[in-house]
Length: 353
Image (cartoon, rainbow, N blue to C red; front, top):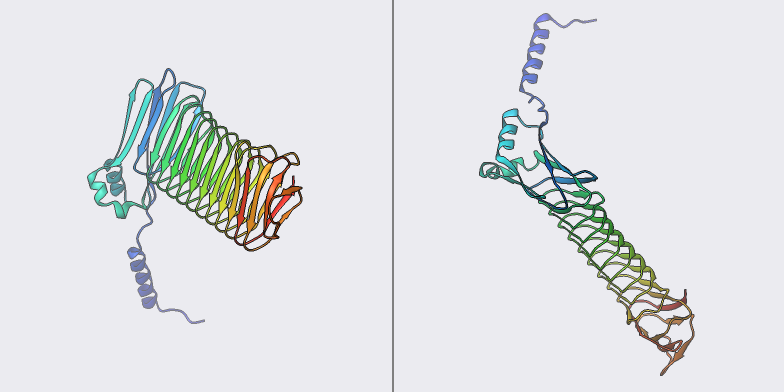
């Protein structure tokens, strides 16, 4: 077996050493934590205005508000990380039972914003009394809130909203994520430009709007207005009037006891009426079928017409005017509110519930 001469081995060792010296040393993450505690004597409000970062709010039965701000600089030298922390100002104030937290970048950090965007991360971990009001806004992360009794406002420009059972009005807005609410006991207003909306239960009037996703509602007790420009709408149970409009998907209402107004430009419509609504009902689509399921005892003035299919009924209709395969006008039972159905690209079918 040939051996490598000592001179060549020394040259190889020097080359490897020189190469290793030129490789940058992996830099560890640098973390900074700010902790604050406040005592309150009753219901108040926590206001948060953050330039970036995720927000996690839990609730307790106590009378204290605990705040921890976790700031992390990824893969930066210690001196650079310290400079970032110094120029990211977080302030706290208390006035009675109201707490205010504000975080913003100072001018020096703003001038380096593009380079530091991916390196600097912030997370807010907060605990408040269960009966409290929240007004939360962040420009760069998700917001999560546990079960709460009080008013809740949450807004983010770059993340999701996740709310538990809230016994009070809820307002949520996201420009880049989805919205999920387990229960809203008061008026609900949810809007997003970049995700889906899912509501398990809305106990008061609800307005839902998204430009880029689906809408799912488990139960709606009061008036519901759901609109999306880029997805489908599915409602399991609605005991009051429903307006559902989409430009890009199907609409399905499994059980409705109030008036239904449903329209889509790119899908089918299906709804089931289990009780007599007080107002008129409408279903209109340009690109699919319409299926309406009705209980035997419901009364309507029917006006159904299609340009691309047939109108079929499994229920007795007292026909008014000329009967055609593409249209049907008449009374269901003794008549009642108007039931108007229109499609340009499919059939209409009335079925027994």
